[in-house]
Image 1 (cartoon, rainbow, N blue to C red):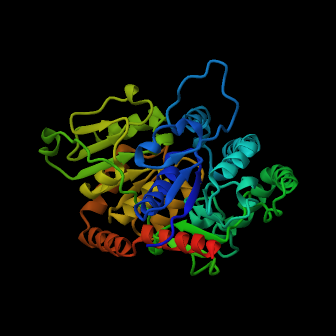
Image 2 (cartoon, rainbow, N blue to C red):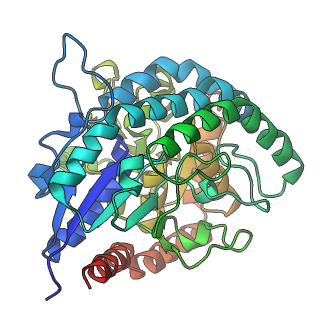
Length: 431
């Protein structure tokens, strides 16, 4: 049996990255290792319930009237406030959505730096794993192997022959790429330069140009081979693709039998824990599918009390997504990386309604690779949405291709591959 190692995970305080780390961490836990989460404080109790140690951080000073928050509540509130900007183009969002998100992340990194130094001193990890988009200097200066996980779209790892990250631009429209990159430079360079200076003052290496995070001794990224960009942007041996990272800790859903007994294809609708805060958009999709020949499972999200479901629907605030996806015929999603890669893992075609960040990139990639249909999130008609669903479900070749792809992805055992490499990295340090 391999020597017991200590792995310290620091995921971004959102369900996607945290669930990804839970999946990998659970595999390491199963192998007898110690797994510690330096997650954001609102995750208190939720990770220890899964068998992990918690040594949590605050990313901002707690308010004077602090009350217990739901997991990831900060980003839910933030996205709710900024959601009117999602109606803008991806290029316009660089200034009104993307750059402000980076600034919030930077503020959090600065605030929690002393806390992370103390956590590392307490836990004495053999390997540090970060699933985030921004550098925390304490993690890369700890003197132990540092692993970066990219659980957003891998356009995050830039290249001249691929579309710019956050753009949602097609692979065939390279004439648009230059203008988008120029706008990214204009809206982000001053902020990046200031952050890079601070990072170096903490003893870390300079950041790559216009990147907010360092690469690691090992770099993992979660994306299926069938959607990947490595033909146009090869990666060196420090990078390992994990085709999927599907956690095995979700409970079985309690779906009412009377709902399952209804007629029609079974559709899963989720805009993620953040996107579902856009209640008007949730209601638009629900209205388009009401009284239609589908059975619709709805992940209602944090504002669930404001969402009323039709008679052909069932849902709840939170749903065990990895248990539901194998049951359904099609997924309507915002294009978050977790839902996109999990739908691919289980071989389900998609309809995509992207809102912000890398969701546009995922929606475009799934669309151009033929595994789903990207719609205009705020301009689709009910007829367009229903046609997108029907066109996919009534095309046996498309359904079979998705099914076969899912089978191939599952056979690649992404969690096992990730755990193998992390284990080897830790054992190498001990030698």
